[in-house]
Length: 222
Image (cartoon, rainbow, N blue to C red; front, top):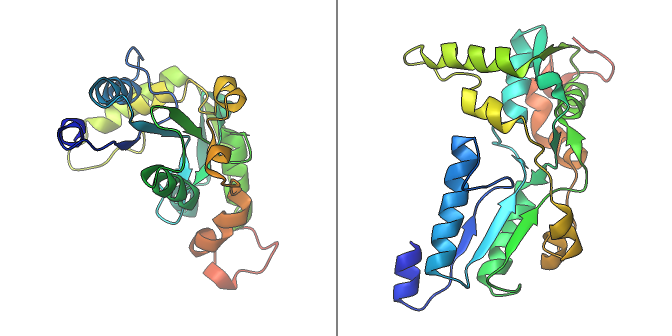
């Protein structure tokens, strides 16, 4: 795609991820880092967007654990749940993409997109459980054991594992906007976007995970 853009004299807006690093231990982060390098070598004026974990109606994070909470009395805290995230709303990311494509921010730069709050993994699960009105035990699981569970689950044919060893590797590092990006103005503020909080949006699509859906009374945790 970068070569095609260069061929017609166009620029390129690429969505990567915070933590992308061509030399990372994680396969995911390493592939993201290599893609960034290849794109910038081909189209130096490309815009790279690095979001933290993205949340929204079809996200693969809050929905996954809310679905798990419907049937399991326990939710796992990988590595103790202390790693930090800066969840960013999908609509904010989409608006940033649109403004980048329209040329409203400087090109040839890397922007890091995070929400207004830095939350630990544990914080995220606690907020989610409060919104879906369920009480569940949060069980700390060491990284090594979580990786073993992911490896075994990955061997089961025709079943998507709840967690892969590479995801466990990713969870060993915080996923937040860097100080450099904040200092240099390479955040959502560069796009004129006020970040949306998790708690402002989560209730709009988490309601289906409540014990009686939208009819659940406040304080009726199950």
